[in-house]
Image (cartoon, rainbow, N blue to C red; front, side, top):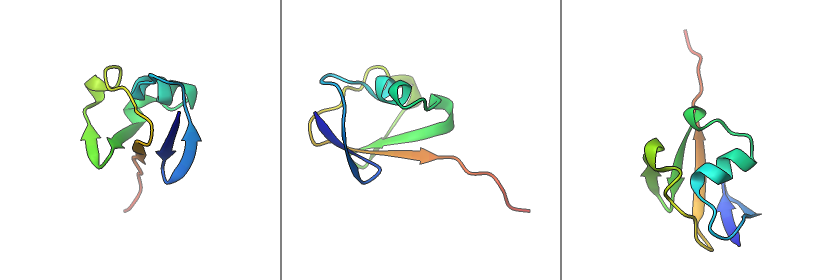
Length: 67
């Protein structure tokens, strides 16, 4: 199925969860926040939330720095 991932069209398996999407892309769940269709998903629900055709997914990475 097709989703939008950080603004780019991507394919993923039917029935994929946020957890499986992160795992397939070698992204550690504790390093990102995930937004699906403009709603932030709680980290504890990543393995429960199934993606659907046309979903818009944003992976929000934490950045360090400053002085």
